[in-house]
Length: 279
Image (tube, rainbow, N blue to C red; front, side, top):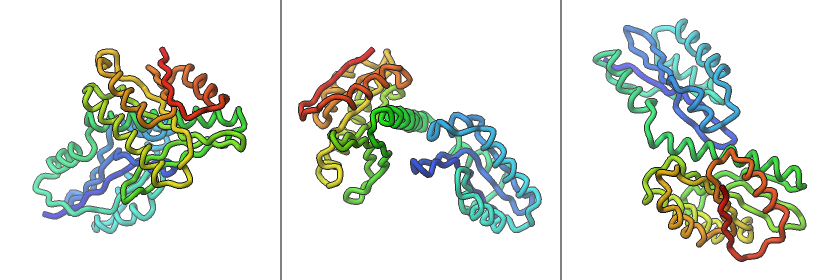
Protein backbone atom coordinates (compact mmCIF):
# COMPACT_ATOMS: atom_id res chain seq x y z
CA UNK A 1 0.00 0.00 0.00
CA UNK A 2 1.29 3.47 -0.88
CA UNK A 3 1.06 6.32 1.60
CA UNK A 4 3.01 9.53 2.04
CA UNK A 5 5.19 11.39 4.47
CA UNK A 6 6.45 14.95 4.95
CA UNK A 7 9.02 16.60 7.17
CA UNK A 8 8.31 19.30 9.73
CA UNK A 9 11.29 21.66 9.82
CA UNK A 10 12.30 24.59 11.95
CA UNK A 11 13.90 27.30 9.83
CA UNK A 12 15.96 30.40 10.36
CA UNK A 13 15.39 32.20 7.06
CA UNK A 14 17.81 34.99 7.93
CA UNK A 15 20.68 32.55 8.34
CA UNK A 16 19.30 30.17 5.67
CA UNK A 17 19.40 27.25 8.12
CA UNK A 18 16.86 24.45 8.61
CA UNK A 19 16.62 21.43 10.86
CA UNK A 20 14.15 18.53 10.86
CA UNK A 21 12.06 18.44 14.05
CA UNK A 22 9.15 16.20 13.12
CA UNK A 23 7.49 13.84 10.70
CA UNK A 24 3.99 13.48 9.23
CA UNK A 25 3.08 10.03 7.91
CA UNK A 26 -0.18 9.24 6.12
CA UNK A 27 -1.67 5.77 5.68
CA UNK A 28 -4.71 5.48 3.36
CA UNK A 29 -6.61 3.39 5.92
CA UNK A 30 -5.16 4.48 9.26
CA UNK A 31 -4.91 8.20 8.63
CA UNK A 32 -2.19 10.53 9.88
CA UNK A 33 0.49 10.22 12.50
CA UNK A 34 2.74 13.09 13.65
CA UNK A 35 6.05 12.22 15.33
CA UNK A 36 8.14 15.02 16.88
CA UNK A 37 11.68 14.90 18.27
CA UNK A 38 12.08 14.92 22.05
CA UNK A 39 14.95 17.40 21.57
CA UNK A 40 12.82 20.09 19.97
CA UNK A 41 14.21 23.05 21.91
CA UNK A 42 17.82 21.89 21.54
CA UNK A 43 17.51 21.42 17.79
CA UNK A 44 15.78 24.74 17.18
CA UNK A 45 18.23 26.72 19.33
CA UNK A 46 21.14 25.09 17.47
CA UNK A 47 20.29 27.24 14.45
CA UNK A 48 18.54 30.15 16.19
CA UNK A 49 19.32 30.77 19.88
CA UNK A 50 16.21 33.00 20.07
CA UNK A 51 13.86 30.10 19.24
CA UNK A 52 11.08 29.47 21.76
CA UNK A 53 10.02 25.84 22.16
CA UNK A 54 6.53 26.84 23.35
CA UNK A 55 5.86 28.74 20.10
CA UNK A 56 7.09 25.82 18.02
CA UNK A 57 4.95 23.36 19.98
CA UNK A 58 1.93 25.60 19.47
CA UNK A 59 2.44 25.61 15.70
CA UNK A 60 2.90 21.83 15.61
CA UNK A 61 -0.32 21.47 17.64
CA UNK A 62 -2.08 23.54 14.98
CA UNK A 63 -0.73 21.17 12.32
CA UNK A 64 -2.06 18.18 14.30
CA UNK A 65 -5.49 19.84 14.56
CA UNK A 66 -5.58 20.46 10.83
CA UNK A 67 -4.74 16.84 10.10
CA UNK A 68 -7.36 15.52 12.53
CA UNK A 69 -10.06 17.15 10.43
CA UNK A 70 -8.49 16.40 7.02
CA UNK A 71 -10.30 14.25 4.50
CA UNK A 72 -9.23 10.90 3.14
CA UNK A 73 -6.95 12.44 0.49
CA UNK A 74 -3.75 12.59 2.52
CA UNK A 75 -1.54 13.82 -0.30
CA UNK A 76 -3.75 16.88 -0.85
CA UNK A 77 -3.91 17.59 2.89
CA UNK A 78 -0.11 17.57 3.18
CA UNK A 79 0.27 19.73 0.06
CA UNK A 80 -2.11 22.27 1.62
CA UNK A 81 -0.01 22.33 4.80
CA UNK A 82 3.16 22.68 2.73
CA UNK A 83 1.74 25.75 0.98
CA UNK A 84 0.60 27.31 4.27
CA UNK A 85 3.53 26.61 6.61
CA UNK A 86 6.54 28.21 4.94
CA UNK A 87 8.20 30.34 7.66
CA UNK A 88 9.73 29.39 11.02
CA UNK A 89 7.91 26.05 10.98
CA UNK A 90 7.84 24.52 7.51
CA UNK A 91 6.06 21.46 6.16
CA UNK A 92 7.70 19.91 3.11
CA UNK A 93 5.86 18.64 0.06
CA UNK A 94 4.63 15.03 0.46
CA UNK A 95 6.84 12.13 -0.56
CA UNK A 96 5.18 8.82 -1.57
CA UNK A 97 6.23 5.79 0.47
CA UNK A 98 5.28 2.11 0.41
CA UNK A 99 3.78 0.98 3.72
CA UNK A 100 3.43 -2.61 4.90
CA UNK A 101 3.39 -1.78 8.63
CA UNK A 102 2.37 1.71 9.78
CA UNK A 103 4.41 1.57 13.00
CA UNK A 104 7.46 0.12 11.24
CA UNK A 105 7.56 2.82 8.54
CA UNK A 106 7.19 5.58 11.14
CA UNK A 107 10.10 4.15 13.12
CA UNK A 108 12.28 3.71 10.03
CA UNK A 109 11.62 7.21 8.73
CA UNK A 110 12.15 8.75 12.16
CA UNK A 111 15.50 7.03 12.58
CA UNK A 112 16.71 8.10 9.15
CA UNK A 113 15.59 11.75 9.02
CA UNK A 114 14.87 12.90 12.60
CA UNK A 115 16.81 10.86 15.15
CA UNK A 116 19.91 12.75 16.41
CA UNK A 117 23.36 11.68 15.23
CA UNK A 118 26.86 12.79 16.25
CA UNK A 119 27.27 14.50 12.87
CA UNK A 120 24.19 16.59 13.53
CA UNK A 121 25.48 17.77 16.88
CA UNK A 122 28.89 18.71 15.46
CA UNK A 123 27.16 20.73 12.75
CA UNK A 124 24.60 22.25 15.12
CA UNK A 125 27.29 23.30 17.59
CA UNK A 126 29.12 25.17 14.80
CA UNK A 127 25.87 26.82 13.72
CA UNK A 128 25.07 27.80 17.30
CA UNK A 129 28.55 29.30 17.81
CA UNK A 130 28.20 31.29 14.58
CA UNK A 131 24.88 32.73 15.75
CA UNK A 132 26.17 33.59 19.24
CA UNK A 133 29.28 35.31 17.91
CA UNK A 134 27.34 37.17 15.20
CA UNK A 135 25.22 38.78 17.92
CA UNK A 136 28.22 39.64 20.10
CA UNK A 137 30.05 41.18 17.15
CA UNK A 138 26.95 43.22 16.26
CA UNK A 139 26.63 44.43 19.87
CA UNK A 140 30.31 45.44 20.00
CA UNK A 141 30.08 47.18 16.63
CA UNK A 142 27.06 49.23 17.70
CA UNK A 143 29.00 50.53 20.71
CA UNK A 144 31.87 51.69 18.47
CA UNK A 145 29.99 53.27 15.55
CA UNK A 146 30.70 50.37 13.21
CA UNK A 147 28.10 48.97 10.84
CA UNK A 148 27.61 45.21 11.01
CA UNK A 149 26.18 42.74 8.51
CA UNK A 150 25.89 38.97 8.60
CA UNK A 151 26.84 38.34 4.97
CA UNK A 152 26.00 34.62 4.97
CA UNK A 153 26.72 32.39 1.99
CA UNK A 154 27.95 33.46 -1.45
CA UNK A 155 28.35 31.30 -4.53
CA UNK A 156 31.95 31.01 -5.74
CA UNK A 157 32.45 28.85 -8.84
CA UNK A 158 29.26 26.96 -8.03
CA UNK A 159 30.18 26.30 -4.39
CA UNK A 160 28.41 27.99 -1.44
CA UNK A 161 31.00 29.67 0.81
CA UNK A 162 30.19 31.11 4.25
CA UNK A 163 31.58 34.66 4.07
CA UNK A 164 31.01 35.53 7.72
CA UNK A 165 30.08 38.70 9.60
CA UNK A 166 31.33 42.01 8.21
CA UNK A 167 32.00 45.15 10.21
CA UNK A 168 32.70 48.48 8.50
CA UNK A 169 33.56 52.05 9.45
CA UNK A 170 34.59 54.88 7.15
CA UNK A 171 37.96 55.45 8.83
CA UNK A 172 38.87 51.78 9.36
CA UNK A 173 39.66 48.67 7.37
CA UNK A 174 36.59 46.46 6.93
CA UNK A 175 36.72 43.18 8.86
CA UNK A 176 35.26 39.78 8.05
CA UNK A 177 34.76 37.70 11.19
CA UNK A 178 34.70 33.90 11.01
CA UNK A 179 33.59 31.53 13.77
CA UNK A 180 35.07 28.05 14.04
CA UNK A 181 34.19 25.65 16.83
CA UNK A 182 36.24 22.49 17.36
CA UNK A 183 34.62 21.73 20.71
CA UNK A 184 32.45 18.88 19.39
CA UNK A 185 35.17 17.34 17.19
CA UNK A 186 37.20 14.67 19.04
CA UNK A 187 39.45 13.56 16.14
CA UNK A 188 42.54 15.66 15.52
CA UNK A 189 42.59 14.95 11.77
CA UNK A 190 39.05 16.32 11.50
CA UNK A 191 40.03 19.39 13.53
CA UNK A 192 42.87 20.08 11.12
CA UNK A 193 40.60 19.44 8.12
CA UNK A 194 38.07 22.01 9.37
CA UNK A 195 40.84 24.60 9.73
CA UNK A 196 42.15 23.86 6.25
CA UNK A 197 38.64 24.20 4.84
CA UNK A 198 38.18 27.61 6.48
CA UNK A 199 41.52 28.85 5.13
CA UNK A 200 40.49 27.66 1.66
CA UNK A 201 37.23 29.60 1.98
CA UNK A 202 39.12 32.76 2.99
CA UNK A 203 41.46 32.44 0.01
CA UNK A 204 38.47 32.00 -2.30
CA UNK A 205 36.76 35.07 -0.82
CA UNK A 206 39.89 37.18 -1.37
CA UNK A 207 40.42 35.91 -4.91
CA UNK A 208 36.87 35.90 -6.24
CA UNK A 209 34.66 38.34 -4.29
CA UNK A 210 35.75 41.84 -5.28
CA UNK A 211 33.67 43.55 -2.59
CA UNK A 212 35.65 41.75 0.15
CA UNK A 213 39.07 41.59 -1.52
CA UNK A 214 40.82 43.95 0.91
CA UNK A 215 39.01 43.04 4.14
CA UNK A 216 40.84 41.80 7.21
CA UNK A 217 39.90 38.23 8.22
CA UNK A 218 39.60 37.43 11.92
CA UNK A 219 38.87 33.88 13.11
CA UNK A 220 37.35 33.30 16.54
CA UNK A 221 38.40 29.75 17.33
CA UNK A 222 36.68 27.74 20.05
CA UNK A 223 39.16 25.08 21.16
CA UNK A 224 38.40 21.35 21.41
CA UNK A 225 37.61 19.85 24.80
CA UNK A 226 40.66 19.34 27.05
CA UNK A 227 40.82 15.61 26.33
CA UNK A 228 40.95 16.29 22.55
CA UNK A 229 43.38 19.20 22.47
CA UNK A 230 46.73 17.50 21.75
CA UNK A 231 46.92 18.68 18.13
CA UNK A 232 45.58 22.21 18.52
CA UNK A 233 48.88 23.83 17.49
CA UNK A 234 48.75 22.11 14.11
CA UNK A 235 45.21 23.42 13.60
CA UNK A 236 46.30 26.95 14.55
CA UNK A 237 49.30 26.72 12.22
CA UNK A 238 46.95 26.10 9.30
CA UNK A 239 44.73 29.02 10.27
CA UNK A 240 47.73 31.36 10.30
CA UNK A 241 48.10 30.78 6.53
CA UNK A 242 44.96 32.73 5.70
CA UNK A 243 43.98 34.97 8.60
CA UNK A 244 44.94 38.37 9.94
CA UNK A 245 44.22 37.37 13.51
CA UNK A 246 43.12 34.32 15.49
CA UNK A 247 41.23 34.81 18.73
CA UNK A 248 41.75 31.50 20.49
CA UNK A 249 39.12 30.82 23.19
CA UNK A 250 38.01 27.90 25.33
CA UNK A 251 34.35 28.89 25.61
CA UNK A 252 32.24 30.99 23.25
CA UNK A 253 30.27 32.33 26.24
CA UNK A 254 33.36 33.80 27.93
CA UNK A 255 33.40 37.56 28.59
CA UNK A 256 36.90 37.56 27.08
CA UNK A 257 35.27 37.25 23.66
CA UNK A 258 33.63 40.67 23.97
CA UNK A 259 36.90 42.21 25.14
CA UNK A 260 38.80 40.81 22.16
CA UNK A 261 36.17 41.88 19.63
CA UNK A 262 36.22 45.39 21.09
CA UNK A 263 40.03 45.45 21.12
CA UNK A 264 40.28 44.50 17.46
CA UNK A 265 37.70 47.07 16.43
CA UNK A 266 39.68 49.81 18.18
CA UNK A 267 43.22 49.21 16.85
CA UNK A 268 44.98 50.32 13.68
CA UNK A 269 45.61 47.04 11.90
CA UNK A 270 48.48 45.98 9.65
CA UNK A 271 48.82 43.09 7.24
CA UNK A 272 50.91 41.14 9.71
CA UNK A 273 49.15 37.98 10.96
CA UNK A 274 48.78 37.66 14.70
CA UNK A 275 47.60 35.04 17.14
CA UNK A 276 46.37 35.57 20.67
CA UNK A 277 45.77 32.63 22.99
CA UNK A 278 43.25 33.26 25.74
CA UNK A 279 42.17 31.32 28.81
